[in-house]
Image 1 (cartoon, rainbow, N blue to C red):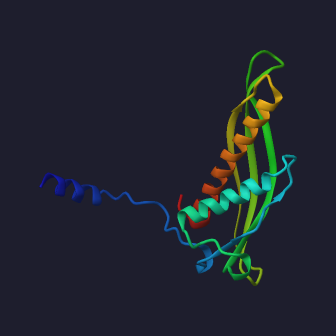
Image 2: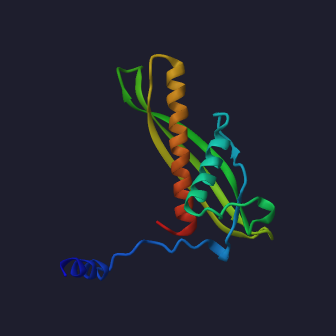
Image 3: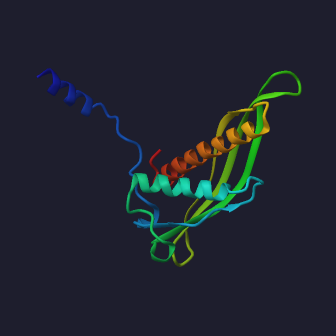
Length: 162
């Protein structure tokens, strides 16, 4: 009886999951183009594009299809990648940096009409090491984390599920 009352009370408290997870324009499938990389980090376009596809596929297994058969195509660019020092070990030596990546995305139907457009930013902090190769590895790992976040943010904003 107590369990039933608890379920009844919790169900009537007014809290609901935000968003309806509906895609704009009533579309049901999306093609994802590889983003244009306007940064100096080579390969970032593949990392971010794949993270977006992975997130969409994780949320809705049949959402992403090839661009020719899709109801709409998501395209865009990686506009910037910034690294700023957030912790120091003296005046000239960085301990941690924060990577910030900004992407501009647009969803268009086959007629070329824009259904949705947004600029999305995500960031992650990574450690700076004495060995340059270790720092570069940390930077690549941070880029993968940021890419995953960009995928999550893109899905949430595209479906209004935030």
